[in-house]
Image 1 (tube, rainbow, N blue to C red):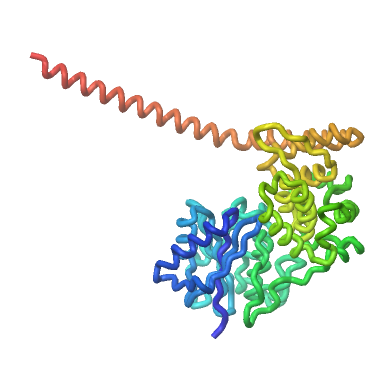
Image 2 (image 1 turned 30 degrees about the horizontal axis):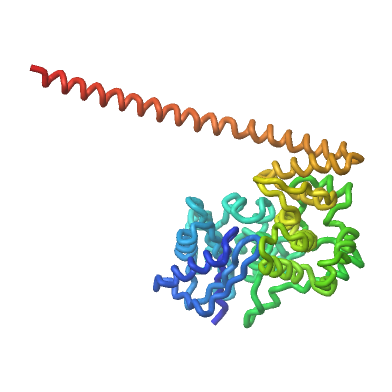
Amino acid sequence: MGLFLQTALFPGCDESIARDAVEAAAKNPVFYIDLEACRYAQSYEGTQVLIEGDTLGFAPLAKALSDVSENPVLLLYIYDGDYWGYDFYGGDEEDHFNTVPDYFGPVSPEEKQRLTGNPAALSGWLPTWDTGMMRRYLVHWSDLDEDAMDETACPDDRFTYGDCWQMTDFMARLGFPWAFDQLQEAPPLQPLYPKLREILERELPPVSTEVPPEGKALLDRLPSALSPEYVRRLLEESGVKEFEFEEKDPAEIIEAVRFHRQTVSRPECDPQCQRLAVLAAFCAFWLRGSIAWGFLDYATYEPVYGSYEKPTDVYVLRARAALTDFSKRHRALRDLERLIELDPANRALYQAEIQRWVSQERAWEKQTEPRYEAIRQQWAEQDRQEKEREARRLQLILEKRRKKKP
């Protein structure tokens, strides 16, 4: 008997909420979930759950977990060690994919299309907007020729098409690298990374091939907190040096920083936690690209309300402004304006970045204006119909009153 495995990704969800959802689903005898064997792993991106049981839950389980947690859920599975797929639910949106949709026999074109996968449905729910990258994994293996089956979806992946463990490469690209210990009868699922000391000594390039979506000019032209020379100095700082991170790999450092934050009251205000967050950002960028922004957000304390000291680390601000995506553009603009104050020598570059954001904002407004105008017209029409109904109701009341007069 081959391997049957299912793991659920809860993006942006605490472990306690994911655990409650799994426990609620286990009460349904249809899913056959062994709660004692289930395993959980929480990260900055959300919670990953290895769900153990006698059968796979597929789409019904994914929907049940999403409904209970009130959170998007991507349930990935391996069937009999032969193929992998997923079922996704996020609010009213859903998506389904299977590498071998005709595994049990011929299927209709409609069913094959349903199991093709839609990157646009996942984009935004999970910590990546790169639909082109996702599409490289969402391939029906029967559509590939023999040579293509020996290839990987991305250059630095470990598993090829035709290998069910390609699922773990896909998970890593979505921001959820395999988080559990070795499984029986499974290949090494957690890659061996070089120690931080080796990365800095040899200045090894990031294993991630993800290009920062915005602000790449800042990283290309100016040193930042993502530069090896900055990290070397950081490792010598009091409060960081004591951890002896040089002999840990990037994944181990990230987990150590997360654990330390959990032991500190209000870590967002703690100077040591802020500096450790910068180191974790370097490691996250080295491993998985632009999602390092989350750690850089922890690197300074800037509450929405109340007074605070403005950030003064030019290198951190450069890195954060470079990695900020469009949804957080107000943060990038604030960082760039602060950089002009702190580093006037590079004012022209910062102003060019600000202008780029302004241009993108205008383009976005122009693109969305027709949609908003349609919504406004729809509301106006609903308001008009409601007024007509109210006028008609009052007219009927008056007519009835007139008829009752002697």
